[in-house]
Length: 301
Image (tube, rainbow, N blue to C red):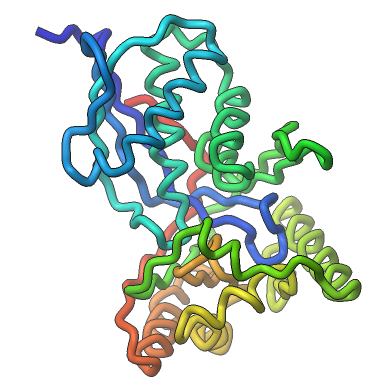
């Protein structure tokens, strides 16, 4: 019989990253969740289902990094993943698993690591701290990385009021982040970088001061969206349709395929319908989620 101390369940929120031009830097947690249950066993690491076992290499890498960082003897465990964060849709599904495994192992080992340390480990595994910081800490996260090593250095976390709703439209098209990065250019025109910096910093200022009205038309990205959005039929049109229906701002969520519009309460239905219609016009079915921000991050249940 497994004792309660040998089992833990972690709730992890999905997240949207980049938030326009904040490439590999900005992340925002959303109220859509995966639950990761970890049970200590005798030996080995094993997922409960075939789908979970397909991602077992990522879980094994996460566990190995945790045990090294925490200076704890490795032990075997089984894991189960359930919830509503869709995979390969730009909503941080991989971080829900990585963060969930890290959080669960941390509890089973007596919590030797801080939440910030867990963000650093998740960032090492992901290669960037945007979703990692938002998923583990919650809120709107502005993460800093070392310009030479790209290692995570820290984060400033900003709570987001629930007067904002994030309308996410996910087409039936999967986009794997590693493959999507292959679409990015080796170099950017100088003034494309300048315009992107302007937009990203203004977005951060608007969210930090809760001047949400200033978000209107504030997002303009030249870093990654011009190269990724053309690969998602209807994606650009869906963002434009949401903006035309009253959204404050819109962007490609992570590397896609989901696109997202920021709305005021009461506007989400109209905006979601317009976004879904744009995908339908491109012959692509889609699913709409109207999500409040999550300010809690990783929660032990």
